[in-house]
Length: 319
Ligand SMILES: Nc1ncnc2c1ncn2[C@@H]1O[C@H](COP(=O)(O)OP(=O)(O)O)[C@@H](O)[C@H]1O
Ligand SMILES: [Mg+2]
Image (tube, helix red, strand yellow):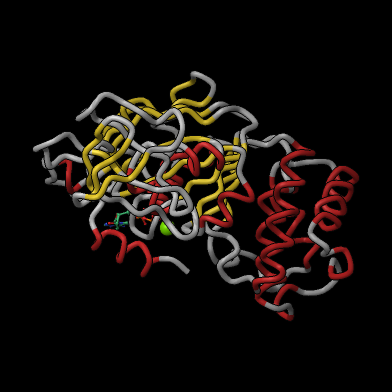
């Protein structure tokens, strides 16, 4: 397992790009702890797959460095990075048996046959595939095929990290829930560095120790599910995490109240601040919520404000 670090990493798919706004990934520094279970959460198109492919080496970043345990791997090909990656749709050999599919990554690395058998049986048991080991993969359902893909990702214990790119998309909802719990359990047993990409907050929040929220090519916040829910660092995080998302209303602080559209709304205990000061409130619909701005200022206290059209786009991309 490895600690993965991005140093001033950025990526654009355009060869002539000069404007950072057009970059698929804007410059970022990010650390992925050795043995951490991360969810990479954000709407479709925000750069999740690009980021994952940069870790595995399928894409070389336009700028910056990728470090594994302080070793610079930016120019190393996928084969030399020792990463297991599971994609959205099954990547398996249809003509092989389930056993041979699971054994493939191990045999490829010349693992001894008794060790291959032991490990395959262990992973098959975790994923409830034991009864199918002798069956040919071609005859199995889409769910079972994707479980084989997950198993192929999990079978090696010597990998630097396992990357999952929305791996449960083709799985039926009940099995999805079961597999998510299994992945969490597997992480607790094997202490692998896992990065799990999803646009679904439920998946992210139930699976991960830490959630990395992305929007428009940027990492906006990294934190525990509770941090994100209770202390969002950005309006987007407030909208995207939690159901329903936060509401934001411009207001002005006035002693122990906030002035919202001319109406005094008392602040919660401990919320009193000097009049006119810039302050964010606990912004969940259950509480009284407001992103606060200074008198005469149009700028939200959360910095970049998050527009209604952004929210609409986000909602459309969910599910
Ligand atoms: N091969 C590519 N060529 C050009 N643009 C791409 C390519 N792959 C992704 N993009 C663009 O990069 C941005 C991020 O895409 P992606 O990483 O696939 O996002 P996500 O996985 O979050 O949906 C999007 O604007 C997408 O259109
Ligand atoms: Mg993607």
